[in-house]
Image 1 (cartoon, rainbow, N blue to C red):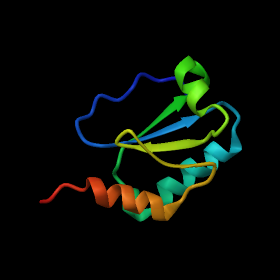
Image 2: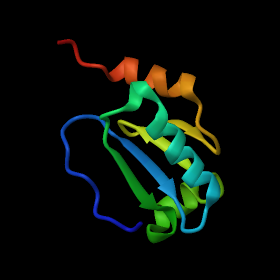
Image 3: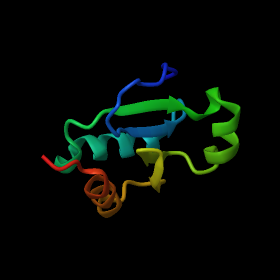
Image 4: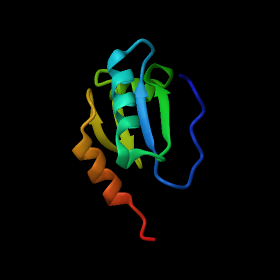
Length: 92
């Protein structure tokens, strides 16, 4: 779970998780099943691997961010995911 951060120019999800956290697995699975989020990169980071992240998010894991902004924590909030995606959607 401890991977280097993605270097992408487009907004992406960051999921702060920890090993053995079933809520993190559930949120990740629910996000993957959400049609609006398909194709959007998800970077899964171990909250315990970064002291600052552990202090900020450790008691709220799982925590989902999009484009650096909090979307939800604990369980997936599909409405908040849709709002975040709509806010950052680029015109074609």
